[in-house]
Structures are given as C-alpha cells and as structure tokens.
Length: 336
Image (cartoon, rainbow, N blue to C red; front, side, top):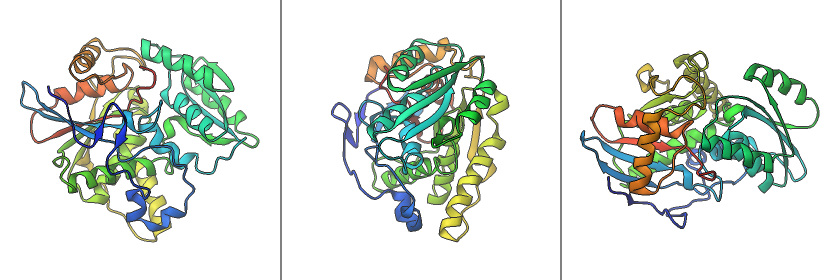
C-alpha cells in the first residue's frame, strides 16, 4: 500500500483547513451555546492507502493527529464533556487499567488546569496498554484500581459525591457524542470538497459505543449513505446493536431539544457489528490483528494499539470489496 497525505503534513501535524467553527455548530447554531473546550486540531486528515490484493480501496481518517501528544477519538468527546471545567477543578472518570480514555482525560484536564481522579479495573494487558497505564499514573492525581468494572462503577458512585466533574467511561454520553456527530459532519465536508470519495463503509472500534453511534448519527444528518462497521473489542453483553441505537437516540434527543426540530431516524442497516476480532477478552491481543498492524506500520509508519485499533483495522481488511472503505484511526498514538 502507498500512503498519500491529502489534508495534512502527517509529520508536522499541521492540518489544512483548520476552522474555529465546528460543522455541528454550522448545522445546529443553538448548540454553540453549550460549553466547549477547544482541545483538538480539526479537521483531522484523510489519507489514501491504495488498493490491496483483494481490490479493496482503503482510506484512513487520522484522528491520531488531532491533538499534541495525546490525540484520538477521545479528544472529540472531551471537548464537550470538559467544556465547563475551570482551573483548579477536579475531574472524575473511570475505565480499564490500560484505558486510553483515562489517560487522555487526565492529559486534557491538565491542559485546562484541572486535576483528574480515576477508578480503573483490572483486565488483560498488552504492551501499549501497559504504557498507557504508566502514563495515566503520572498524570492522574489519584488512581484506584478494582477487580472488575462492576466494583469500579460502584466505587465511582460514591466518588461522585462532592464537587467533581464526572466523565463517563469512554466519554459515551449524549453530550460527549456531539463530538462524534461533529466528526461525521467533518468527514462529509471533506467528501464535499473532493478530498476523498464518499466511503461506502467506515470502520471503527466498538467499545463503549459512543464513537460508532455518534458517527452513524452524523452521517444520517449529513445525508451521507455510509454504513458504520463497528468492530467489537469488549464482551458482547455490553456491545450490542441495541446499545448503539440507544446512544444515537439519546444524542439525537439532545440536539432536537436545543434545536426544537426532529432529526433523521437511523436505519437499522446503518450499523454492522463485527464480532470475530474480539479475541476473547478485553485488552487481549489478537495475533492476526497485531500482524496486520505491524504490516501497516512497516509501510506507512502509522501505529495502532492491540486493544482497539489493530482489531478494527483487521476488520476493515476482511470486508468484501465494494466501494471505498475508510478506517477511522481512533488511537491517540501518544503512547506508541
């Protein structure tokens, strides 16, 4: 595959077409009244990876370049979730022991002059997850690690008492998903400007679900006939089609409340869930996904992580040909 940068110099991180007005505010002006912290550099670039041996036309959306040091999809949600945070405030969040969400929340919180406390749970760790955990320990003012997600959630209920800004796991809430709706509108703008063809499918990891659901909602709003392929990286009991529709509906209701008008309804066929890249446990590396990520790195220099993006990349490579396929790189890359 040959890498061609179309909207940014990937080495410098300077993005062509940076704008102060997010597309979601242009589409829904009333949302501009919501508090938002400017944390990212947008639009993130797209690159053409060429055609593979199976004649798939592959593109990539480089969200790893959307912020200094720690980028990725979490930055998009945190712009809305940390909008009311002031210097000296305390942020509370939770996630797995190797959670990039915990790390990026702490990093973005520090940029705003806030302190981050986090509650994590143990899970299988891979090298990237270990590096993420170590850096989160450096940035968080307090970390507590529990045996599992249920005990972590219960602990968070007690920890939320008092004057803290609560950020849900993965940033997957109606407010946080505004960042991913904005991402989809951003991509639609890049398509309209001729920077890439309209993808038939966009592939993202499916963890807490906010990214997949928000992007799908954004495509519906933009009128872009693109399906979201969600590569499941967590247990199936928490990653279902119903959850994606519930999340998308909650975000649509939030926008409709502020805009006082109805939003498009998501069609059931706009989601495809891929289950065969999970690997059997959250955080467990899948050898075939790791090998695919290593090949991508050797030809492009792009880094993926074993918990999320490597598995989504493998899912993209397994899709049948049929129109441009866009792999949305959600990994921040700051820990690679």
